[in-house]
Image 1 (cartoon, rainbow, N blue to C red):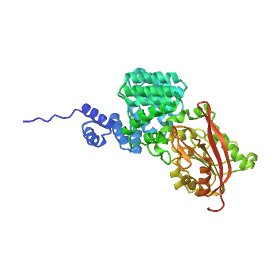
Image 2: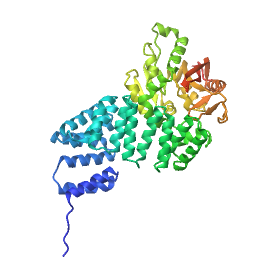
Image 3: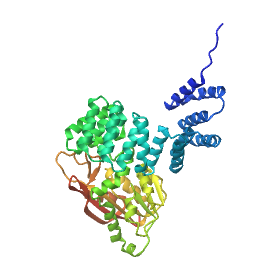
Image 4: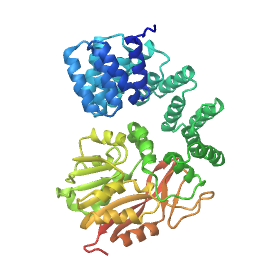
Length: 484
């Protein structure tokens, strides 16, 4: 006679947790049903169910379960941790921080709770406050890669660049096969413009056999930034072999001349670049003597001098608003209400903190213009069209969304002939750093074809790079009072 062996609830619980963690939600669901029949209701079962719902994308259902679970068992720190994760997903960062802090109070030995609180504090732009939490989490679990990566991020954002680099070195030493850590270390060096160091880190990853397409792409970018273009081309070629469809890789490979020129930078490329760059964006631009927002303000006042005397102008659209520098330089003028559009949520988070925009929209600017129904008397495109090669389409889109007589003020990098660069396509060229440059006559031609008249077109230094000015063009365009 055969005897049936009943499954062990503890063993089943571990299996379900592993399945949920690995995304095997369809396999986990029936096992969870079996576990519920075997075990009485508990905070652990509620947390597991909520984790499964989160994996399934059912965030609000998970929150409802967690709210009920916390009410029944307010001392369950695991429920607080899970609810903090859920609240992050709906962008309730304040609520998430409260739950994570309560989890630390309920279980002071929980490295997971401390690491979560530290990560949320980084999201709240409080990296200095995050560091003690993350140091304690790392002390409790020294080899946990995610904790070390978060600590390095907090150190970098608080200005401790040497500490961030040391933390990443330690994390790689403890987790030598983690390609994500290698990439994060390279990105930290890139954001500090330590391109030689970034290239060395990428080369080490390649020698260690821990390199993916992103590592090779970053190696190419770093080598290109140090003028080693032939070596950069080889690195880009390797990246393309590993990820032939990746938009980040393809754009940089195109910039290196290994693929035909693209008409613009892909949205996914821009989002990836600027999400990682957002926290340091303003400080970096200031260090480069960035002049574009001030130039656009001066051009606007030259066209509308009454603004300096209190005249109003709006609503106004800031395309590629980034962290909101245009709103800052216009904040003493009656320009607005302001709408900002950017593809990067990280950039928009920085802009949102300034409190100067009525509306902020995460979208590709061409997609936004295609759906927008507002007619704007003022549109600004500060340093965003350098990610477009062909300009006629986007300028035509802006034209359809403007009031007759409305102003479009834009900047682009000016195309200048340089030895070793790719040939000019029409009136534009994609440079090795992934940005496009344009000839003055090409921009003027596209503007005229779109239906704009040119009020001003000037050559300006946009910023400095490598101790040299970056030449640019500033255009003030006016939508004619008729189409054509």
